[in-house]
Structures are given as structure tokens and as C-alpha cells.
Image 1 (cartoon, rainbow over the protein chains, first blue to last red):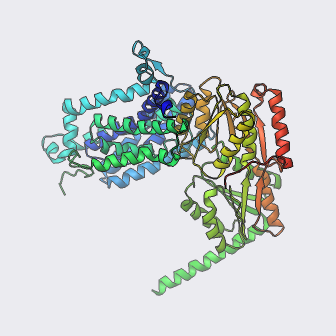
Image 2: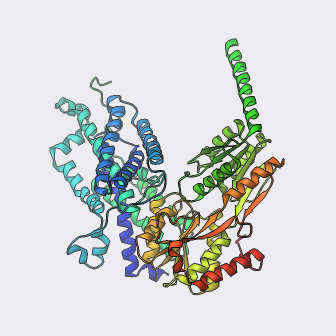
Image 3: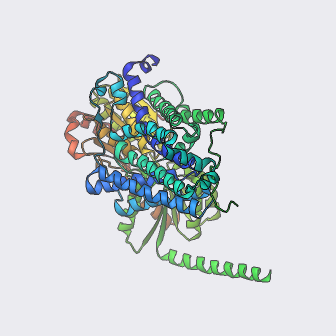
Amino acid sequence: MINQLLEFSTIIGILTTAIRLATPFLLAALGEMFDQRAGVYNLGVEGVMMLGAFIGFWVSLRTGSSYIGILAAIFAGVLMGLLMGLVSITLQAEQGISGIGLFMFGVGLAGYLFRITIGYITNIEGFQPIKIPILGDIPILGTVFFNHNWMVYFAFLMVPISWFILFKTTWGLKIRTAGMTPEAADTLGLSVVAIRYTCLVIGSVAAAMAGAFLTLGHTNMYADNISAGRGFIAVALVYFGRWNPWGILGGALFFSFVDALQLWVQVLGLKIPYEFAVMAPYVLTILALVLAARRIWEPAALGKPFNREGD
Amino acid sequence: MKKVALSVVLIMVLAMLLSACGTQTASQKIKIALVLPSTVDDLSWSQGMTEGVKAVQKELGEDKVEVAISERLGNPTDAAAAVRQYASQGYDLIIAHGSQYQSILDEIAKEFPKTSFAYGTGYQAHDNIFAYDPQSQEGAYLQGIIAGKLTKSNIIGIVGPIEAGDAIKYNVGFQQGVKSVNPNADVRVAYTGSFGDIAKASELAKAQIDAGADILTGTAQQTVGAIKACAEKPGIYWLGNDMDQSSIAPDTVLTAQAYNWKDVVMQMVKFRQEGKIGGEHLVLSLGNGGIQIVVNQKLANVIPADVMALVEQTKKDIIAGKLTIELPK
């Protein structure tokens, strides 16, 4: 049995599964990283994912085009980001509470809209895998990395792009300042409010795309509670990755790899109680979070509403 | 302080008045409440029961049966609040559709001795609690025969939810059915650890297929994700459970074990009319028509006639008691 696990075809299977599983985490967590770098944490990722998953699916089903579906999901993400901004930035509500509110709102709204617009389980074509020329023909690597649908490539490309934006552009510097010392940013004439709003919209769009990936690029269907807690894992991955895109990539891959491995271990019939297999990715992530609990990378003003009067 | 006391008394009186009204209407028609772990449109466990209750309502008349449904109460603590509320609103029969609700019903049923409660999969029935118990291993055994005969790779994959209740009975029956016709076949059981994570079920089905399985089966509402994953690979078949699921993948879903919930609900309504408000263990089996094997007509030619004949014969043997399926204790 152990030999089977080390066979090439099995290893390819595990890695390919891991890449697919990592995609929604990566998108949602990179988005959440922008929120937090600007000083706002959004616990509503799960709700935004659920709404993005539904809107993307519904529009794809009605129009017959998953590309129009993803645009609609992005639009829903913009609205959810603005809503979170209104509550947590403009009205300066406690961010944790407003995030939970956004989560419940998104989940409830998605479920309700599904009931009144579709109301039964159905499916769509979804995004088909695109084999990257040349790279896709490399043995092993080609199957594992270069034979997915465009959303997978997009999610992984967002890692270096996010890193570049955050650390190599002035705009990235502004974002980080808004999250570290908003007073200083304000003194320099930057609008902390505008920066935080923009980041919330970016984060929310990314979460909506992560949700839409589940319906348009993974299961090709919508059912109640499709996100199943992935939004919260994504928030944990931001801490795991220490607010750094590469760290988040590592965390998402680690979690997904363990998850893929445990699925395959079960399929191949290795004698491990399935309960241990199922909880392995969560337990290891918690362990890693505990071991990496030093918060020196945390944006200093995270969670603190910005107020010009400085109260 | 006086004012507070007065308002409490007033509210109590008002509440008594309302509950009195409630019982009056209840004597004219039967009020059924359904508490579901997932949604009425999950294409499996919850949808099957919902359709059963609706069918009873249709048969007895819309004016005779009132139905209320609460969804997404997979967590027993949340479900308890809904059950209690229905009970205090004067509902006659409250069905909490899942084995996980047994303990909350045990507790609540004592407070409402005139109300009937029901749950399942389970067998422990008390004074005013019905337990219904689909013998899912029976239909699973028949589907196992089909899988064992049809597999070309000799690998059959199960996409399981959580190792409990219905899933155990189904998986055990299915494995025995496969072994009875094809001892060399490898039945691989894997669980997602969830009932409703369709993305995980999809991924597990893909892993099973990549590892060589050509026939897959499984239980719980998440299986719709697995069915879709099977539909995307040619030559892979799915054997369904709970209800006919061929609508989402007409070229993939071969058969399904469908539960006839209508009969169970009707039975409970009749018991109540006869003055028996609980204490019955209601079995759904091949013998009493509580379980049926539904064949997807579009793919009927995929199953050879001799296999179908064997399935029919085995069904007769199970009904006659000549064949019993061993369940783990």
C-alpha cells in the first residue's frame, strides 16, 4: 500500500489535487492580506465567497457564459467590499463584529437568492482546463501545474503580482503605511479612508472570485453552503503567511497538500482511521500557527478604526 | 415592580390564549413540522423527505394537513430551538430528519407529552417518539451486485460523508453485494468528513477515478458534487442513494436506492389518528416498499439482462429472509 503511495501516478494525482484545492484559499487569502495590510480585517470572507459562488453560477447558467458569470461575481464582490467599508471604515464599527455580520449576510443572501432564482440542483459547463503550450508537455510538471483552467493560473500569478504591488510600488507603500501608522499617512496627505476602501474592495473581489472558482472552475454546480468554511481558513492563512504573499502561497499549498494527501491515503486504503486523515490539514495548520505565533509582522494599526480627531 | 409583574401576568395570559387557539385549529387538521439538516432542494436526504411529506399533504388534502419546514439545522443545538418552538406552537407531528437529533428529541418530548416526534435513521422509539429506519444496506447490496458485475477495472470507489448511521449501513451492504458476485473487486471506502461539502466530495471522486475506480457510489447531500465529477469523465458510472439523482447527470447515474418517505409519514399520521402517538420503530425495507431501486431508463441497456435478473432474484431472497446482510454491531 505504501508503495502505491510512492508511485508516480499517485504523486501526480496528489499534487494536481493540491493545486486545485489551493486555488480558492490563495485567492481569498491574498485579498484578505490587502485588507489587513491596510489595517482592516474582514472576517466576512466566507459570506463574500458564498455570494460570489452563487452570483457567478446563476449568471453563467442564465447567460451560458462563465466569463459573464465571473464578471458578475466580481461586481458582487465590489458591492460587498463597499458595504464592509461603509460599516467598518465610515461608521467605524468594530471590525470583528461587522465582518461576522457580512459573513451571515452573504451566506443568507446567497441561499435566499438561490431558492428564488434556481431552486434545484443543476450544473453548467464551467471553465475548461487550458493546457499551456510547451510547458504543459513536460512530464509530471506539465500535468501537475500547467493543465488547469485559467482561474488556477490567475490565482498563482497573483502571488508575485501582489508582492510587487505591496513592496515595490508607492501605492503598496501607502497601503502598508495606512495599516502601520495611519496618523503618519494622514499627515503626509494620504487619504487613509480611500486606501482602506480600495483594499477592502480588492479583498472582497478576490473572495468573490474564490467563491466563483468553486462553482465555475471546480464543481461546476451550486449547492447550499458550497464554501463550507473555506473563507475562515483563508483568514487563518493570512496570519500563517505573516501578511506576505509568498508566506500565504506556502500556507495554502501546505494545507491543500496535506488535504490532498489524506484524500489519497483514504482512497488507497491505507489503514489510518479516516477521522485522523480528515482533520490532519486543520491540526497541522493550527500547530504551524501556534509555532509561528510571533506577531512582529502584523500591521500595527490592524483592527483600529482611523479617526482624524485621534480619539 | 408592580408594573413588571402586571406585564408578565398579561403576557402569560396572552400566551395561554394563543396556545388555546393553537390547539383548537390542531384538532381540525394535522400540523406537521419538518426540521431538516440541509435544504429542501438538496437532491438527496432532505429533498426526499420533503417530497414525502408533500405527497402526504396532497393525498389527504391541503386543508387537512399543514406543513412547516425549517432548513439548515444540521447542528442539533439549533435544531432543538426549532423543535421546541414547533412543539409549543401546537404542531402534532414534528419530524427531525436525522440520526443526530435523537438526544434532543429525548429531552424535548418529555415536555410535550401530547406531541408526536420522529427522527431517523434510528430505532429507539419511546412514548411519543417514532424512529424510522431505512434498511439502506438492502438496496446497497443490490447496487453492489450491479457494481461488481459492471466494473472493468475491478476498483469501485465510495465517496462517504462521515462514518455514521446511514453511511455505515450503506457501505457495509454495498461491499457485501460487490463481494457476492466479484470477490476480486477492490471497494475503496473514503470519507470527506462532512455531509455538505460538495467541493470536497468532487475532489474525492476525482481522486477515486484517478486511482482507477470506474464505478462510484456514496451517500449524503454532498454526493451531487461527486456525481458531477464522475459525469466529466467518460465511462464512469454512479450509483445513487436517497432519491433518483439522474436529473443532474443522465449519462452517469445508473441506478439509485430511493426511500419512500411518503409511506413512513402516512404511517405516522395514521398511528396518531388511532391514538398512538409514538413508540413505533418504522422500518423502510425492500419488503415493505420503503426502499426501491430506481433504474435510469436512459442507461437501462448498460446493465445486462442477466445482471438485472440476478438483482431481482436477490431482492426476492432478501424479502423472503433467505439472505441477510451482516451489519457491524
